[in-house]
Length: 533
Image (cartoon, rainbow, N blue to C red; front, side, top):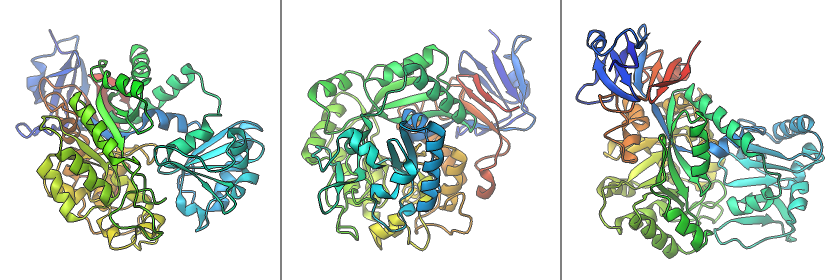
């Protein structure tokens, strides 16, 4: 049978060490059937083959975002963004404009609120009540670990004081016990958002499909989804059956200490559920919070005296639950930002029986060299998001750095140090925490600064990644982390036909210029999911 589709006259970086470059590739039934030069590719083509003349495009394997929250990101996108709004005046202006847009009484749910926008003040709902106008409003902080609600939203939710949560969440109250509107961690946030009307299933599916298409347009062909629940398989099945799942999704079910036994049992039985483009054999845990609000788990307290408690109030329960999911055959990952959190997770993984599955840790924002050395020893994958450096400043006067305090700031997000030590490093965005465009991640990984802060020098003292290491973090390393090294991450005969055509070699392009690199073509399973005009 002839190939369905072929790309010729390209400059192909295969990421295959045995056959690193080529100029043409042929595809049939979603797989690569030939790769080499244009003459050899013609041997598997006939008049029915769609031949795409790349005219010098630079082709790589499709990029996989190694940490993302697709559904939340798509839903957040229906509300206002506060990204790079760094003053209270600016926050109020965005809120007021959104109130005019949606009208009185409607919910406003914004995202990407920057802690620096508080300008050193403690949050109180009075800071936004007037701007939010007649209706409930809640803004997620940039890390999605804190919510800021106005008085109207608190009243609707019946929040009049502190509450007990069994996952480390809490409602901030003032000296009189009245809620300030600051809601730390997800259970506290959900206590308010549970009163918001639910969108229809059709609306949600449309939003998800639009988000997938937008990511295809910047070269993303797959994601590691980090907050799945029991409804996720049904959503992915609906997207796939309607032809709108234009990427691969590696599902990680979110496991937290609030889940009851019946829910845990249901998740444990979900490991083998899958579709053509998605699989559900991952489980994600979260053992601490974030530096900025004092909920990261640290060896020593932060500058406010916080950071000494895990998000799982009972670490033994965390370890026991990890063992259950490991015994059921899940690939495990844990959100661990603070140095104590990372150490505790490594200890937990070390105690598990030997397995061919690679377990991993997400974020790893501050760790000493002695902890870095353990990743390779234990075969643990480091999942990093260099784009998160966009909120830090070289003078260490940003909220993250001032809260953590020196000298721990110098160990910030050490993706290059981990890679240099021989660890498997997977790269991603944590969208909607940060923009998903991998070209922004390429710049931050190599220059260790925000793409939109050219005056900034490198953040911290950790080694930058090279362009090739960065490309590996989005391709071959992502495939190794999910147990797909024999069918994904490279362009090789028999592998999935997931690829991207760029305007230049993304691994060698000057990092300053990579953010504007054109994306000409994106394929998943050999299907064209994006094509430039």
